[in-house]
Length: 226
Image 1 (spheres, rainbow, N blue to C red):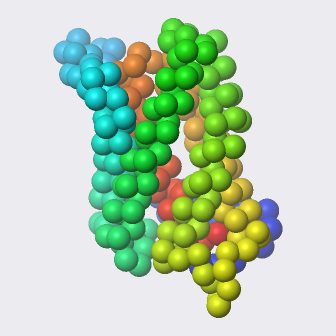
Image 2 (image 1 turned 120 degrees about the vertical axis):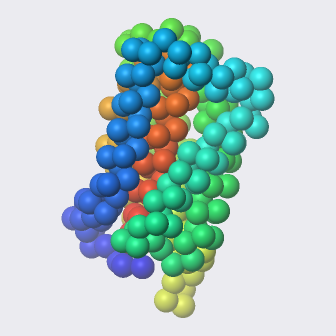
């Protein structure tokens, strides 16, 4: 695991993460854009995507786990296993651990989204989307998601261990992992979440899945380098 030198070192890691995962990002975001275009331009697509929303309503947390297991683990795992430039040691174990972690986080996000709907309503408008994004990124993300991700990706990137160079995790190590995750999360999620929250529920589920797959690849890379 390479030690970063302050903020400058972290920024280099962030940039390196984007560069290393540029091809998967282009593919995943292209698919997200295609899904949005197809939803509004091809009448039959809306009906197909509504199946995911209905499944979410019917199965709740089980559906949330399955959705994030696939989007956060299986989909990025395809790139991890087929691209030597981003493949970590113990790649299969990394993909499995990532899939389970994202599935569990999917349950937490589902609960949070439910509360968001109660607090601010479910109207797909720009105003509601902005408020939900701010609460999501500067409340839920800062206080809950990122601290847990900082621990998980530090552990994952360090070969499934909290020990390094004969010692345990230090505050400095945790801070580097936390800052690396939150900066990348804000850079990717804030502009995209405003759009996602403005979409109908069936499209929110689809597009957020592609965004989640992108974030997973970036976070795994940062965890190895931070």
